[in-house]
Length: 381
Ligand SMILES: Nc1ncnc2c1ncn2[C@@H]1O[C@H](COP(=O)(O)OP(=O)(O)O)[C@@H](O)[C@H]1O
Ligand SMILES: [Mg+2]
Image 1 (spheres, rainbow, N blue to C red):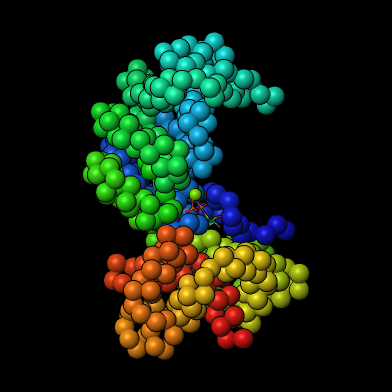
Image 2 (cartoon, protein in one colour; image 1 turned 60 degrees about the vertical axis):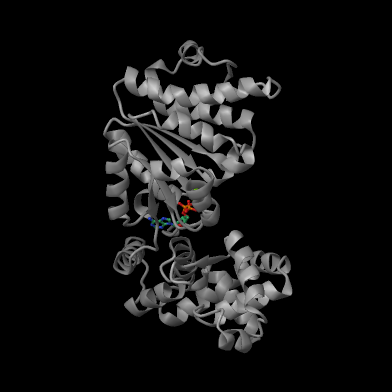
């Protein structure tokens, strides 16, 4: 029997649960040509959610192109990935022949070299050396193709830009370029995904305000308690292993319904049940948690080693307390944090690094369940 839980990669099908509300919202927005920006901490399920929506949208005749900006560190790479995404998502399969593809991109200032891969798919290569302006024009040309396809084929088009915050390291001028092209593409929905919340917020609110007004924010939360517990119960049932209801409650209390961390803890709990032929009880959950912490130890240590002593103190305070009123004198005294301005500085860094999340109400917490546990354990030992 294979483990019915999965973490780390994009999940779909039986590994994906709920998000009904978000799916409906995203799908109907895309059908309306509305631009969206989906923001959440890392590993909350943005990519899984949007790809799931894309799968549904394709069935409703929407042409979807997907690109991950993490994998496009420079402009020529971005152009290559864009060309591939457009080719894959926007050109009908029967037209995906070499010649057609070449025709398709023939209007571009720099034409891609089309390489047929052994598996029958194509990749696109732009010479890294062309004059910068040419590669800029090529990226613009590629982005313009979206609207052309929508009107030629009379279809709705969606472009998904994952890890969009990376755009700033590719070229800070890109958001402006995109804005000027995208705002005239009425039949194209642009979906921006990003995990570095502060970067995304500033990208969409200050640096290029038009992007912000253009895109409707969708904030992804944890998965609802009842959906997640039904999912966990069902996955155990389907795989012929047992878990008692209190253990499900315990898992969700530990992870606070964090999608990735819940699947990870379930994965370990299931493995114990499988190996030892026992039902998962709250005690087994504790055993699984300690295994997860062992598995995560190296990653947590590495992160910890990079932090200054004050930042560590702040993390300890957040991991053992509730993260409210952190600037109050009582809180700072109790946790040995020194002046409020220093706390402010450390928090700013920790938020930038996506280690700490701030709620609008001024509550701070470690977004990563296991780092939180790891730090708390360290503080108590
Ligand atoms: N809807 C979901 N149902 C169950 N697990 C999910 C769901 N969404 C995400 N996960 C879990 O979270 C992990 C990270 O998902 P991913 O889509 O890569 O997040 P993000 O793009 O926000 O970083 C997945 O590997 C999976 O374990
Ligand atoms: Mg992702």
